Length: 517
Image 1 (cartoon, rainbow, N blue to C red):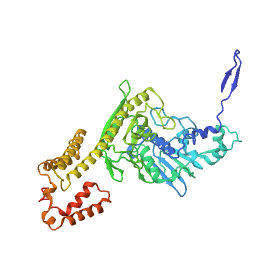
Image 2 (image 1 turned 90 degrees about the vertical axis):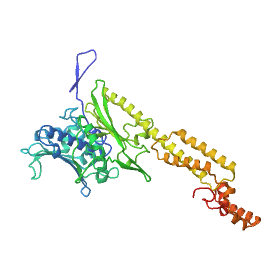
Image 3 (image 1 turned 135 degrees about the horizontal axis):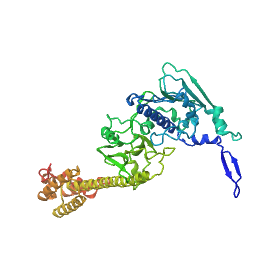
Image 4 (image 1 turned 90 degrees about the horizontal axis):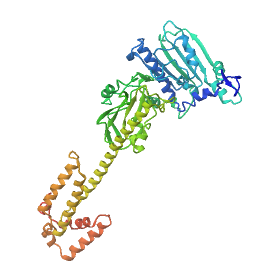
């Protein structure tokens, strides 16, 4: 109860601060407006529960699990873990509270006491089942979500939050079933509603989402740098990987060493660079890695690997565009692959789409901006190189065509062609091709051909076949050449090509003409 003081008097007025029914809507549907976000929250709580069990010696991490089960026919979604669970004495208090959690902020991922309520806005009923010791009963806390929604949407009904929960949540202790573990926590969403293409019942979509967001391990068989990344991240506060499965299929990170950029373009992770972020005192505030690729273009979204993803407690915060502002151009955010894992001193906000602003987070952003400038430079350099290569290939094609002519009309034509080719080669050399560039080989072949052409030019007078010409009178010869020119001119060929093709029937073989066959 708060007391208000009247100005200029010592008299006090008693006033109660009331929390109405709409607060429940704010911290459920209002907080988690994307259905799959609630899975992230349940898995976050499960990971924290496993950490508690591992740290107090109740469980071993390799034996721990988080199981997600989807039943489309009965429209049920279940998330179960074998972590520490909640004791009979604390289960009701914790699972009925809003914004109150026994977790220590900074030591565990969740501490605000609202994530467990996320499923209330997306189904008819949410049931929590848990215990922490084999000697205990199983506590069941069941929220009647359908009734809650009806009451909240009826604006004529005035309800205080405590009364709303008391009237629509059932609490009971029951004897454990034979298969139930000594310590566990299980969430069952019954009567799951259809939202956003029914994502909460879409196995493929859920597996894809959790592979990116959830605290799962890398797939060493597909991502060859997995061991290097694991070692680098091992000292990050809160970094752990968990055995998470969806309908029996284990979830792993989606990173792969090679991937398709487009139908005709394949790229690969050639190496990785490891990075670390520190505060002014020299203490690490996070570590990360990014992939060295050819930076060909934006990585397709359906590969689920693009973006420098930011994680805390090994759970993603935001999405692939979270760091888009660090790049010189927003599009470069989707050209890169990598992760940044921040320590627990930098805390996500309640929606996990950003972080609370602190000095450490500000220092991280400063260093992230420096990283973004470097990554943007890599994209621009790659883009310039590709543009130069395309231009070089076009110039080489022009040179090849000039040198492929079956003959030169005369010495002047030969000299003009060589001069043009020499100028074009100078343009290529000015671009400074790298020694290992495949275009270097083509350039050397053309330079050899140019050298041969200087010493052994194929002039038209030397290439004409006298025997063939002697069999034709001058009128017939001119008529045939003109007819051939007229027939070929309409196909879009150049004048030189048309003339060369028209005269071709009257030439010697290329060897006798002085050209290489």
